[in-house]
Image 1 (cartoon, rainbow, N blue to C red):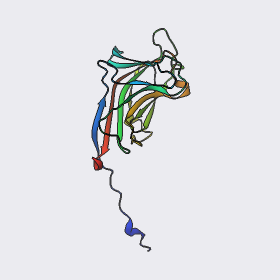
Image 2: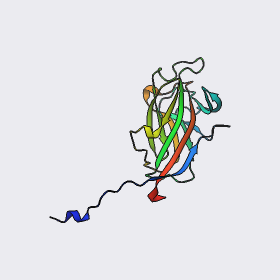
Image 3: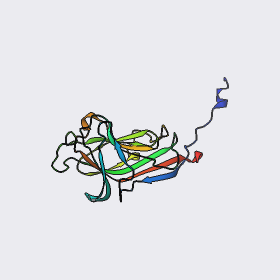
Image 4: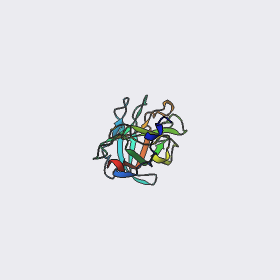
Length: 190
């Protein structure tokens, strides 16, 4: 033979992951540093709500203009450790899209499900189709269109809407509860 096999090695199992840090949103007394993310609406209103539809300490987000492009809310500075390319990020939360906040109707461009995204630290994102007027649990490991491995080193997370048919209109409201982000790293690099 040509001696090609002498340099081949076997593939080993991937290393285990180690949990480095956990960020849990604290909306018990305020908005925990969350802020609007919208090139169109600088006045998105974020407030802490003591109780909504059976959940306590929730973040209420209200849009004050008809959105025309990517929009939502963001939080930076989640971890004390730097996010590295190749880290694994896991996000879980509950979200409620209110289709009829008060006297307003049709704030989500219809009553159908709305494509909702979460961009996690490290510039990876997951997308879900979220029903309106009910709490929906979002869990990044169950949305398996990607591996949730970071491709960058950013330390912010976004909850956003980007599909043209699902952009919020003036008066649209959504609520977030129990938002948790976990940062894992390969045991080889800890």
